[in-house]
Length: 114
Ligand code: FES
Image (cartoon, rainbow, N blue to C red):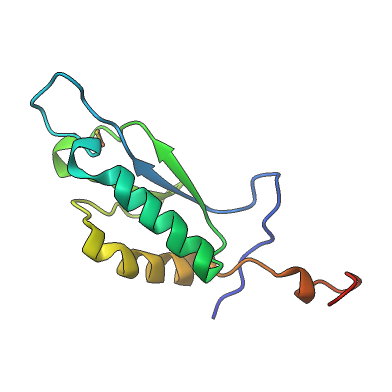
């Protein structure tokens, strides 16, 4: 198991960006029209349950709409394309390996109750 950096408000937590763009009034493909919001919800819930040291960010378009739903670790992570709900566990395992886990307060010396 990999320990990730502290979950601090200064931006040290890795981010996983998920496109939820929905092209209203268009028959062109988009991540949102292919269920990416539900996938984002499932990944966010799974990441919280597993204590993965990652922040899930919903973003609007990577510019690869025909390949969606699209998502990636930012910056620089490989794209996950054409994602569906059946792939959520696999993505969570990838995030767990890449980002590690959030530190619990009982792991921090000097915190009462630890
Ligand atoms: S709509 Fe998701 S990449 Fe454009």
